[in-house]
Length: 230
Image (tube, rainbow, N blue to C red; front, side):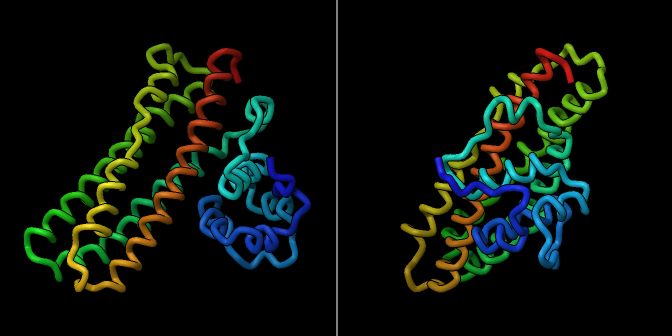
């Protein structure tokens, strides 16, 4: 386990400098750049963000060998988790994926019609699968968790149902990257292909961390509530 986990007293600016990927995490908590010399704790307090959950997310994104302990999950205030996950969904569906789609469309238009159609078909299938998964979370899973917090009778659902249907869309993304790497003509917008491929790899890494938060934090947290109450 790494010995350099982010802590409350660390400056927020130093967190970003330590791992530049975390700059994409801040807006999902409603935090923007320009926090001066303030510590992580101070910035979280200003924006009414759960400090334990913020640190958990940042450490998961920054360190592949970090996972919170069951005690950290059970006893922390994680009610900010659902707004964060919903904001992440918005980021993927409204920003990252459309950005990739725009560049893939340019590549498809420069290919032979059949090649371009295959490329966009694979991307559309991937995009639809991601949207379907996020929609299920927001319409079924999140209301269920909110019901648990409110003490409502939610006997018709348990989080294991979500765990069992927690679809993994990585395979479709791998198919897409294989098409770009192996099968598109080498003389078709080579710089554009390299750039969009890099964006796809970054998206895949980000989504993998997103899924880890759901599987290693959200699901254990809800299981604990189901067993012991809020």
